[in-house]
Length: 238
Image: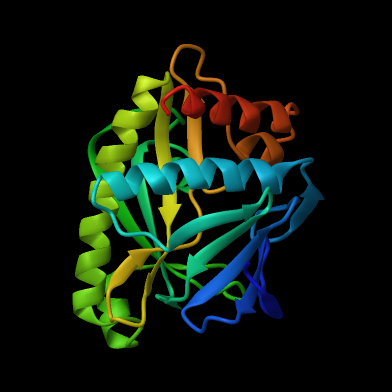
C-alpha cells in the first residue's frame, strides 16, 4: 500500500505528495480548470478522474513504444504513483496544425495542417506566463543541460509520431500538445506530468469538433462529454 505523507506542491491541475519511497511520488488529479495563464478559473466535473484514466492509457501505450515515462501505477480513480524526477523548467510544445497562439502569431486561421511538425520551447514560469524561448535562452540561462534538452527533443518527436498513429486510429486529429520532462535519480530523462485533453488539442477527424480544454477556454459547453469521448475511443484500442 502506498503511504501519502506530505503535500509538497500544488499546481493548477494536480497535487504532488511525497511517499515513504524517496524515488516515488503520488499525483492527485484535480477537477480544477484554468485557462489564459490562470485568468479564467472553474471546475470540470470528473476532470481529474478522466485525465488520470486518459494519461494512464497514453503512458502505457508510450512505454510500449520505448518512451520512458514517470508512470508506475494507478492508485485510485484520481491518484497515480509516479517516479520522482527533477522537472526540466522548459515546456516542449509539438504542433501539427495551426491553432491557439501559433495561429494568432502567424496571422493564420485555425485548422491548417502544417507541412512540417513544429517543436517550440517555453520557459516554465507561471509568474512570467511561460514565455516562448529558444535553445540559446536555455543554454544562456542554464535552464537545462544540453544533453537533456537533446534527449527531450528526440522523445518529443517520437511521442508525436506514436500519438499521431494512435489518435488517427480512433478518428481524432492531434493538432498540438505540450510535454514536460524530468531527470530521474539515475540521471535519465523521462516523460513526466500528464497527457490528456488538458494539454492536447484534439479534434474529431470528421467534424473538427473540439474534444479538449478549448471547450472550457471558449465557453463551448459539453466539456465533460468531450473528455469522456476521448477516453471511450482510446479504450477501444486496449
